[in-house]
Image (cartoon, rainbow, N blue to C red):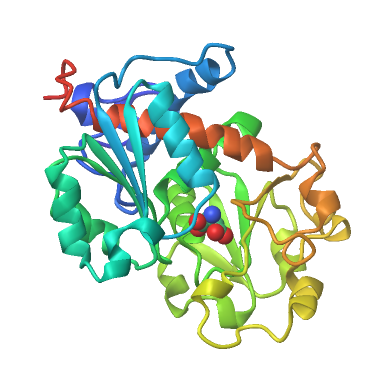
Length: 330
Ligand code: ASP
């Protein structure tokens, strides 16, 4: 079924046909209406999160395990807040304190998590594909909170929701993603998400940080940031992922900033009302200047964080509908 066949973007296939997936491991392969359905569902939680009492009982009695094998601030906190606001018992497992450090294999960890009868497991892992491996071993839905340089689906969804709120329909917008694309799961998930929703995506960075396979994606490739910025509706900056770099990919952070840093002067090359985004954590003065990051006329960076909670609430809700016996989701 195509998006056109579903009628308006707000009319989705009903019941589990709206999102017929057991897990959320990536954006690749999702249909446009499945992405739009997740975004539409998240909107109710944006409203709830603005109230003084932020409690919903949808996940009452359920256990959500956040298993984070890699550091995180925003993603871990927002999954924890999302689960708690929905009424679930949320348990966080940090790899530094886990048996991984004692040499346990990923499969044994997966079997252990499964034996604890979680109703959903949220996983972040440093290796691409590790989340899929765990998903294959457990009985409950698994949500990928970032695996290596592969995918970070909830980041792309929260980015899409932020863009939708600021710009309306994503289809037809020109979005420039700039920086360390090679190591960025955020870039990969956003490329899938934005191109699926009909945006024109430009990808920019030094040749050393652009993956060779990029020409297989439906994107325009730039190495000159000024050229990429011309006419952009949205500028999404990426952090240099030093922790994933094996050797030197750039001459120096200073030179990188000179060529690829988002300065106020450079932002003027994009559309007048261009939206500036960054998934965080930011390296101020490297990929983005503070006066741009903090300029509320352009920057949506804190709104991205806000949308992250709502999107994660929606994902936890939707993926547990089957086990909760919600009508139409059996
Ligand atoms: N927080 C994002 C991630 O986990 C982006 C970053 O770390 O630069 O991939």
